[in-house]
Length: 152
Image 1 (cartoon, rainbow, N blue to C red):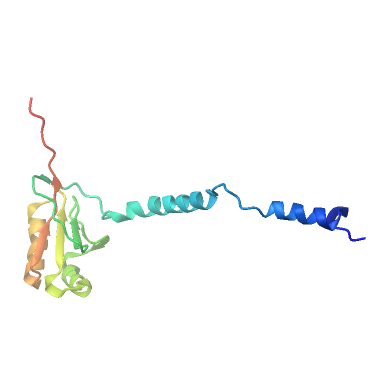
Image 2 (cartoon, rainbow, N blue to C red):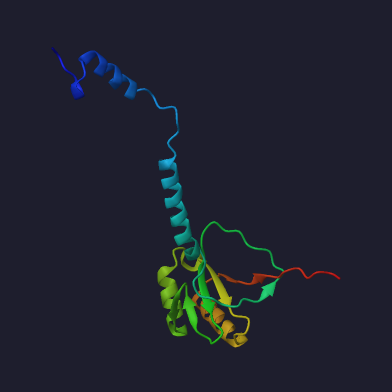
């Protein structure tokens, strides 16, 4: 006499086995939730890194925002006169050699100067003068867009 698993006969055992292999008509959302949670964590971690890391109080103007596909090189001048190339603090005499070394387009590299609105005007002009004397042609000043005042 042939016996199946758990002491059942072979015929009845095969029928129970087939019932367990029927297609499941329910959607399994666990992998979808796992992927969404991973993406959420990735975006939460990388979002703060998308801004320039040196905080500075920029002056406000009505100028329109420039659109450019390539990220420019940023030079930041803080309130106390400290100069930063991207996020690294440097001295004024080190600015041009380091900038020349990292500029991929040579002297046609787009450079944005971000100066705090309370920094001395002479300091900003000194930095821009160094850039101009070195031969860089595409220098821009960065400002915050001015909020429209409500008319009463």
